[in-house]
Length: 300
Image (tube, rainbow, N blue to C red):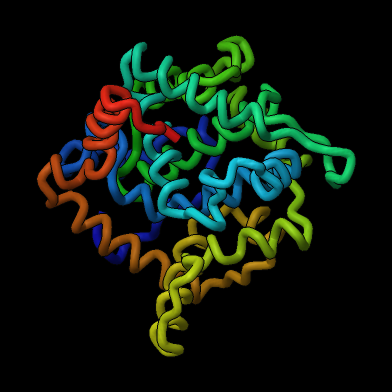
């Protein structure tokens, strides 16, 4: 794919057949499915958080969380490390690593439940909400792969989907809850969109995440506007239109072209990076997790 070719849109279904032109080219590129998680996936992180929190039970569960150290609005870098470590553990971790991380997450989740004053009822152990979060992570991974690498052939896409079940089963989602195949996943996704709603309170909570505004960091006006404008473009570009509408984030053909050009340049750079650089920081997170387990440090 050249810098001038269009970016595959985030509205595409997971079960959609691969584009033959892009499938043929994929094998000549540096990045492949064997790279697993790539550093460029971090760019899609804020959009994926928005997708997850677009379910009111997840949104209010995070916004009202009693777990101070895990609040994304107050500790965004730490929260990002926890999320990315979870992705690494769920997809590449050993049984021992998964068990240790599950215990740590469960301990934190035990403090996340609604009260009489909560606008919506929620519990972090709700398997339906956990399935939604896992589905967002899987969809986000496929979108990133399609944008930065290319098409998966049908066999690879099916294998990748089957492996995606660990995004849920690493916590409380039983394997039988994961949709049977990619077509079933697409049906689940469309049905779940009916439960998506971002109210004013959650939208206000999410907007600083969308524009990468860090708590306590003040930039000069022009630099802040440039930084937040670029972050907003990237975040909105990774969001399907339903979520843009819920967040009231504007999008048009001009913004799409800017997003396409930016992603195309980053994709070209990503392909020429050595694998050890392309896979950073995910390739070191499991090593850090082992160190945390060994030294008794908190995992989340």
